[in-house]
Structures are given as C-alpha cells and as structure tokens.
Image 1 (spheres, rainbow, N blue to C red):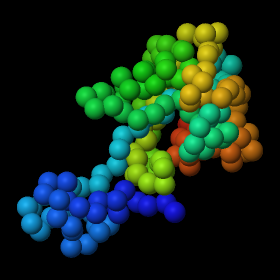
Image 2 (image 1 turned 60 degrees about the vertical axis):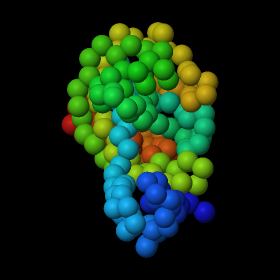
Image 3 (image 1 turned 90 degrees about the vertical axis):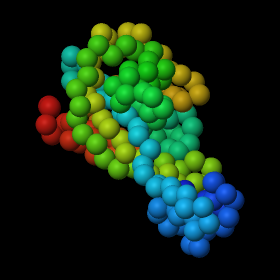
Length: 175
C-alpha cells in the first residue's frame, strides 16, 4: 500500500504529541504549535542531445521504474543549486561532463520509495556534452543507455510521466 508522506506523520516531531488529524497539510500540532508544510522535493532532469539530434536516455537499474526509460538526473541536495545538481547527477550516472545547459521546463511528479509517496517538482534542462564517447553507467542507478530519437513505444515506457512530458516538449520546440 502506498502512503502519501503527509500520512506518515503520526506524532509531532517537536513534542511527540499525536496530531488532531493525520494526513493534513500543513501538519499542525495543537500542543506546541509546530507546523510543517509538505511541499515538493526538488529534482532535475537532463535532456542531452548529440549533434545528430539523438537523445540520451537511461534504462533504470532500480525501482521506481526499474527497466524503464528515464532522463539522467535526480534529487537536489541541500545547499545545491538546480544547475549544480544537474551537472553532478549527469556526471554520476553517465560519466559525462555538461558543458552548457539551458532551462526547458518543470513538471510535478511523485516518487514512491518503500511505499511512501513524496511529491516532487522536476526541473528539466537541455544540456550539451562534449561527446557520448565517455559514456559509462553507474551500476547502482543505470542498467544501460538508449541513444536515439524516442519513438512512441519508448515514450510509453518512461519511468516518470514528467520525463515523458519534458521530452515531448523538447521535441516539439527544439527539433
């Protein structure tokens, strides 16, 4: 059973009291006045295209979406900018160095880990890399890669709807 993260707060993190209502946002504690807003986590995705107009997709090595297609990217760490996070995630997952990036769009997403669903805001960037020659998969995250113009079948097998929407927007606006 998948549980929204707001339903996992069974006690106040400030004083330990049970809330009047579980699953509400914001969480408010009547005992100590602690409040917590369940805003989305930030994540980034890289639309990397080569000189032939082919996109780089990865095939996910783990859940959520194991075996499905995705864009290189991941969660933004505390104290990190979207841009720095994107460069780091691309390097970690693909071994490639981003030389240029440009904001494309953002879409809401949901990420389920160990049966807890977290709202996420995915920010997508169009990225340039020197080449795909140094491409290497991070085994914990990436099973393999797909390089090409995504077909409807590939787009239908994306791990995240937000990734599919970003690719479709990119193809409509940039190609």
